[in-house]
Length: 65
Image (cartoon, rainbow, N blue to C red; front, side):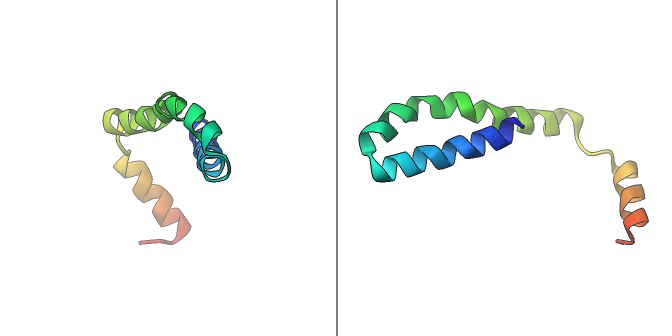
């Protein structure tokens, strides 16, 4: 959910910067705050990793080798 909000914010920021640069400049400081969702996802992936056995079970169930 946080990544969806982050992506929406990036789109709004870019669109505002294109149409009205003054508003885009006021939104720029919040990019770091919104970008925390990406950092949280990266940290979770590094710490938790991927359960390889479960991944293979799901792939075999789906018929992918």
